Amino acid sequence: MNLTSKKVTVQKPASELCDFLCDVKNFKQLMPENISKFEVINESAFIFALKGMPEIALEVKEVKSPNYIKLGAKSDKLPFTLIGNIEEVNESSSEIALQFEGDFNPMMAMMIKGPITKFLETLVSSLEKS
Image (cartoon, rainbow, N blue to C red; front, side, top):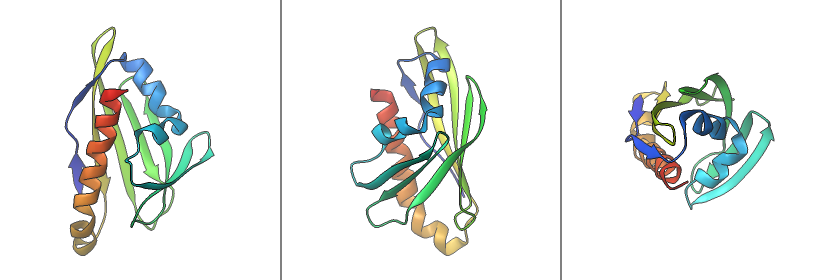
């Protein structure tokens, strides 16, 4: 299952935006209002939970500064990645789109498509406002 968010403009240079996303504690301010848990595990990983959803642990897997950051699930139970593709617009702003890639059975994919799509849109909207 592959889902991509809308592309938004962030008032930060690409390198600053990439650095912001590499610091996992910054994800707390991007999370939706219905978050029930957020905990930093270490400098490259965190756990979060949304009401009605299981806890998910994410860790930074790969960074190609300033244009690419890949986070992946720490557990093999829900194998997925969250990729941020960043493009510099000018020296004070950049654009980002988030891409979710997961390997789920059709039933699971049908159940999580709506919530994951909404989650991606919340993350990029929060980035746009930051």
